[in-house]
Length: 114
Image 1 (cartoon, rainbow, N blue to C red):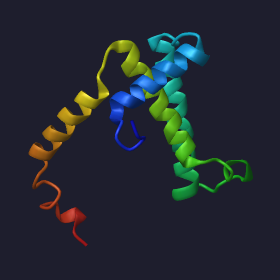
Image 2: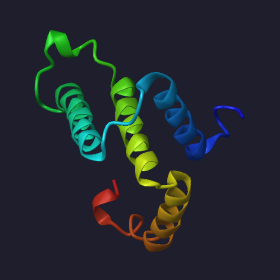
Image 3: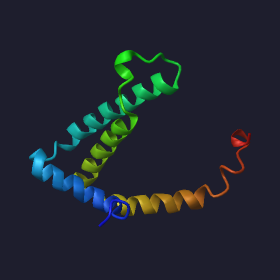
């Protein structure tokens, strides 16, 4: 299965295989929740300094936003795996709801018109 077509189920399987081969076992759910908070904080730090009004320290300039976002995704996938969530099904359901609920919402938002 190619990287482009494996979807979220493939990503979940890939993470599960990695955990079994290299990670010994999943951290418990609360530890992973703390891990997720830490990883989101690292993304926030980059965003605030690189794209926000805070100055970027020399030590932050080498940080890779893509890597940090991937760390967030990895922990989210771990949480999904250990709680039995099918992210592909959840994603499809969420996008269908958003598409139905918001089909005109953003087009009619004067704040978004420039």
